[in-house]
Length: 467
Image 1 (cartoon, one colour):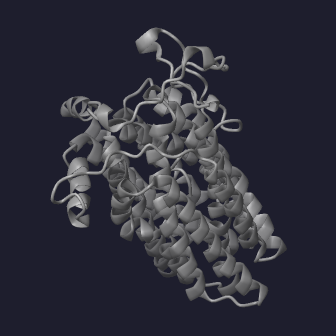
Image 2 (cartoon, helix red, strand yellow; image 1 turned 45 degrees about the vertical axis):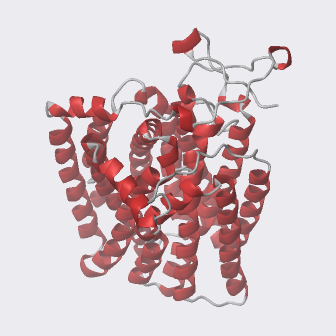
């Protein structure tokens, strides 16, 4: 039986049920957790495979670029299709395609064949399907939890993804140390478990079909999403600043992998450093809901970029694995709070029938820059070396911190924030929860105060979800 939504504190003075009480949210969380784990294991193994088998930094950067290129090419059309199609079916299709693509890598490695072109193509296909999956999952969250718990759900989803990073990165490195094909075969199994879980999701409440002469035209629908985001000055400015920081961090990840290899470290060491980042992200996600209720997004963006600008230069002087792990812990902790704040803000203010298109524009800006960061950093490392590359990345982050402080401290920032934060009048587009007769209503489960993230180990991100 589907649980009836209870009024939030603002409506009836009662606590909302725990997120774990919503069956579809649990299934969505679990299926996506398996999918994220599979994507992270194979994604990290792509870089290790190329770097360890070819020794070419530019080739590793090229594969990283191929894996991130869909963030630039696929986002906008994917957003339109996600708004048109059944999102649950989209997610299931994405899982199947990724499972087959990764299986081809495991098969080629079993035959002792490593081709950079093949790895790049599979990385592109997997990431393309991940774009569709993330947009679909994030859009579905509004249909499986009440509006009052969106912030808690997003924080829990982000905690899931960060927690998976903590587990997947060292696991992928350890499996790669056993044999290069092991992380890819493991990803195939995880994708299979994800598919089984998603099959059990109930039928989705889709927004009504869009009407009008241009409703089915791809270009018109993409333009509508772009105009919606661009018309909100506060929102678009925050997105552009965050996009710049994502570019920097993508370069930092590749550079640290090169530093470890230059110093004679093992592939597992990189996994442990990434695991430290995953733990930091998990802690940051669990704190993100609390911070999001107390500070507006503009203050979180300023504080985050200032902190990043302060700690990043340490990578120039301290190349030890422990120091780099501490750096990734701190930067990921901060990054998770920014992600929770941004995702909650976007999902809350976007009309239901535009979730896919607006989400695609957001992901294009904040993640699309990462592909350029991977490609550019690969060639920069070849040209000037790891130390000068780290110095350049630190300088870019310092500039972003200054821009964020200048933009969001001006008098008009608060006014733009209030204008953008107006709730969308789309109640008619969101089908109500079916009523359940009071006599049949099950006892209320243990509940949490509205907005408090549930335990990610017993409940569920979408998103952004997946990977």
